[in-house]
Structures are given as structure tokens and as C-alpha cells.
Image (cartoon, rainbow, N blue to C red; front, side, top):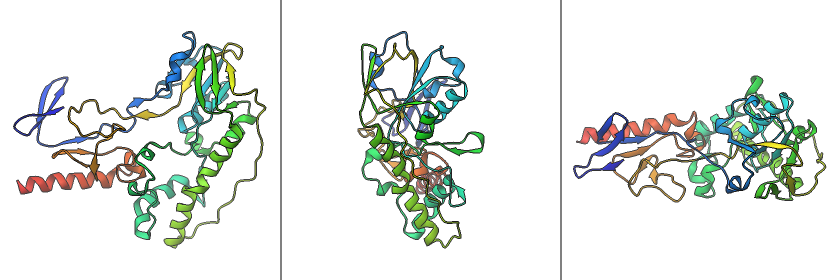
Length: 315
């Protein structure tokens, strides 16, 4: 997409060229499956696929499976493989565990309420302006499941069920994988993440809004740790024939041929109004708030629509 001398955007499509005075980028937050560089060093006979392309265990050859990443996709795929009787290895990322239900409601009920009404009560932790850095726009979502009516996923529980837990995948070398040697610390940080951020905001919102909600039930202490054989894993020795990369997505804005993207391939903007007059963005992660790419897209879309309508009225 470019801009012509007349000030119109030229958008090439499969059905020809379109001209537009205004363009809204609404091409989604989960566009480009992200795979780490280590994938190139894994032997070719090992089946690799991103969670984007995973559908069921029957896609995979017999043998053990390594799942890399413990966001929602990684956790749910691991459970799916376990239920199918597969042997699973799991590389643990830093996505925080979260209870599926908290203080009498689904945890996403509180996340939604804090997004929509938190600022009215001075609770702004889920607004983009309060992120620690622009890179935090791509932080992973809490680890939990929507299957079977929704339930909590605990990494230690997966370990008890037979999943072989490993640290962060750092490199691949001639059929051997090298993981960070920090699994106990990593599990502790994953378990503490909810209490350090989302729990505090939900509790603050409940108190500030005067909502009657049951008191939180703290999770029981759990110091279970797996037996580990060190940070190296021999794929052949463990009969690992498949690797599933549950490693998230990057933005794909390759259709734009104008200098409007930052170093994360994210449009530079203010409330979805980009630096290029007439070019807008909605549905991006953390556009204005945590849920901007999910149910919270409504307020952003309304603001952009009013901005475009206002410009036309002036014309």
C-alpha cells in the first residue's frame, strides 16, 4: 500500500487496485507465527510445526513430543497430548499461571471490568500508557484453559501427570537441545506472576467499585519439583519425533510501503491515529489497553470511526 500524488492510498488486491482516502488497519494481532532460530538446527527428520497449525495429536508421528512455550496454547496442547496418551516434554516460558476463577467470577470477567471501568476508579494498570516499555505490548497472556468449561492449568500438576519439564530453550546442537538450568526459579516466578499484577488490580477494582465478592482463596503451597537430568536433552535418546512451537506471533504489516512502523513492526500512533494522515489502526495488542486486540476493540473502533467521520464533515 502506497500513497499517490493525489493524496489517496493505493491498495493492491487480488481483484485489482483500490483507491481510498482513509484506510483502517484491522488485520489482526496474531498474524505471523514466531519460531526461534534454534528451529533451524533441529534434525530434519523431526516434525516441526507452530501451534498455529496444530489441530490434534493425529497430525504427529509416533514418539514423544516437545512443546516449547507455556502460554495458553502451549498449556492446552500439552493437555491434549497427555489425554491422547502421548509422552510430552515441555519447555517452560515466563507466562504467569492464573486461576480460571477468582473471587466468585471467571478471571477474565475481572480483567474485562478493569479494562472497561478501572480508570474510573484510578486503576490504570491495564492501559497502554502504564506499560513498563513498548516491548511489553507483546507479553504473553496468562496460562489457563477454556476447555471443558474452563479450568486452571498448573505446571507442577502437569509434571505430576508425567510431563517432563525443562527450562527455556536456548539452543540446538547436533540433535541435542540446551535449556536454561533454572527450572525451580522459573516455576516459582510463573506461580507468583498473577499475584504480582492481575490479582492486585482485580482486588483494587473490587474494593474501589464497592463490589461484594467472596474473599480470595490462596493456592495451597506446592514445592514439588521434577527429577531433572540437566540442561541438555538428546532428541534421539528420548525418542522425540515432533516439536511444537507455542512461541507466539509477530505482527505482519508488510503491505505498508511507508515509514510508519516502529522497531517492533507496530504502527506509530496516538489512540489508533497513525502519523500518516488518513491511516488508522484497530485490533492491535495493547493499542490503548490490554484487551484492544480482543473484546476491548469496541472503544478503539468507535474513536476511529468518529475521527474519520469528523474529518469528512470538515471536508
